[in-house]
Each structure stands twice: as C-alpha cells, then as structure tokens.
Image (cartoon, rainbow, N blue to C red; front, top):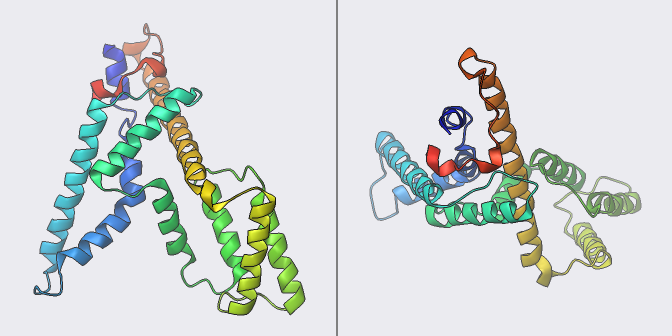
Length: 243
C-alpha cells in the first residue's frame, strides 16, 4: 500500500470534490455576492467581499472533504453498486456543502449558455453541444425529433423561428409535448429520470477518475524506484487513506 499511497497522492483523487465545486462554484459565488451586501447594509468593499467569498468556498471545501474522509468510494465504473454508492456520496457532499445538484447544475448551465440566443435552432444546437461536452448520451434519440419538429414549423412560417415569437414557439412546445408522449416521457416520471441522470453522471465521473488514477500509476511505474512494483488494482484503493 505504500506505493499505492504515493501514486494515488499524485493522481488527483480530489477530482470529485474539484468537479463539484467547478460545477456549482459560479452560482455559489454569485449567490454569496448577493447576500454579502443586503439592502439594509452599506455596500461591501471589494476586498471584504472577496475575503467573504474565499472563506465561504473554503468552508464548503472543508465540509465536502469531511464527507469524503468518512464515506467509502470504490473506483469501479463498471459496477452498478459502486456507481450508485458514488452517486449517493456526492449527493451527500452537495447537500452538506450546499452545492448544486446535477439537475440544478444542468439547468443553470443551460440558462447561462443560452441567454441571449434569439432563435430556436441555435438554442437547440447549443443544448446538443452542452450535452456532448457533459458526456451525456441521447439514448432515446430525442434531439433529432426536436430538430425535425423545428424544421417543420420553420418550413411553414418560411423563416427562422425566433424565441420571441410566442405564437409559433407555443406551437413548437406543443410538438415537443407530442414527442414526449410518443416516447412515453411523462412529467410524473421526471424524478426517476433525474435519478437515472445522476447515475449516468456518476458513472462518467468514476470513469474519468479511474482513468486519471491508472495514468498516474503507469507514469510512476516507469520510474526506477518502482521497477519491482506491481500496478495496484484501483478498485481496492480506499480514497479515505489519502485525504
């Protein structure tokens, strides 16, 4: 385990914590900035505001780290039980550190990157790009159906559909409802879909974490002092020992 400790310490085992803060940090900072200078108090100076934000983020980081020091994580993205446990641990981290959930993060990301987009086509294309960058898969093929519905409406109105066009946007939304009904997607199923999304994201993060661990250990094994050592099984590593 001595070798494993040295190797894992260099393989960014805090990837999950960093990812969680990277995902929710922007909103947390913005929220804190708003709370830092309420209406009944004088405006907060720039230095004081930055100090407040720093200590707030530091507090959240320490809270998250405290959870990870207690909870067992198995780095095995191919094991459904390990993926489920990882998802639960990260959910606990988000709840205790007051970070965004995966669905909240996705919603915030969409709102941020689509703000100001005037037309529906660019909006849908942007959603697709965000999905791909997030490592999510369109398992049911809903994106082509949505684009097909948009093309149908644009063909009828003979111009690009603007998001400010309330009448035709309502028609597009109605078409989307039909697509959801055709695919068997119901509003009451959203909690289940959100759970499935959390597991998919958890598997993606575990896969990346495993990749980084393996790459770091392979690099270290090339060093002379590790020539006689064998590659540790990442599934048997206990992250808690290295935090």
